[in-house]
Length: 187
Image (cartoon, rainbow, N blue to C red):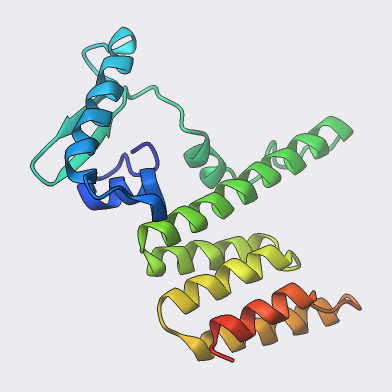
């Protein structure tokens, strides 16, 4: 709900985010119980502006007060900390922000894949690769997103890109990355 606060999320998508592959048969009746518990837990924090969960027949939406801070949104919007300034602590803070942004994108790609939103997962994985093109995990996430869209040739292109980028550094993809590409592309 927090990651999708700009728009309502469908009941099925919310259930998939909660239970994933272990979704119970009675998820449709269990979901309102969980949402009710969430509402109850938010009551001590609630003001006129929120936070509260608004539910409709087929979707839910989390409304947060305007001053709310969401780490993922902050990391996504972060570009450069103190541009033009230099110093050991600034460099360390920049590396930390970069790391937070990468982790947030990795989790977003994984969550979108679990929700069945392969297009969004692919866009996020491409952004992840743009930020850290030498990280093999980013290449694997892109391959998974492409495979989820049924794009086997895209999986092979992603593997070739991974090989090319790593070769430029005198490296090669791990056997796990190569095997994942073969499995996702169907051999």
